[in-house]
Length: 123
Image (cartoon, rainbow, N blue to C red; front, side, top):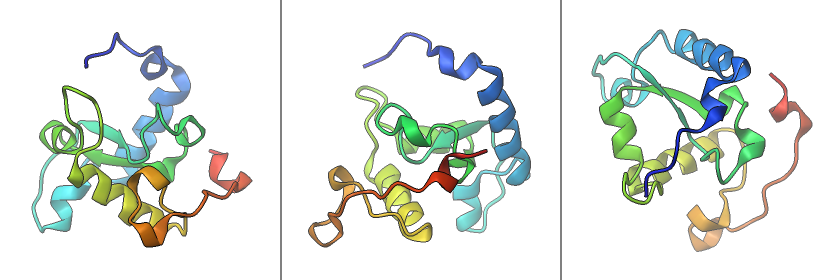
């Protein structure tokens, strides 16, 4: 289901954070890089979806630079839900930062509440 343009992406705060993420990742598709491939990144993907986890929308650890084609592999473009590949990235990221995997995306052994940590919210 396609949504109207989200004003979030026009905000100066997002534009600055997006640029910081792209620079951090050297404008490279980080998912392609995992497999030893070089691909230019044009998109910054919210690993924990912005609409479901607005508290992480401006957290740089929640952002990954990717190409448009990689970004399309992370989302079902009809429903905008994460695909299995997107879910796997979310789980890897949660584990990397010691965040319990959200129940919706967790296997039965990972279903724990997400803790609040003030330092995750500051940019």
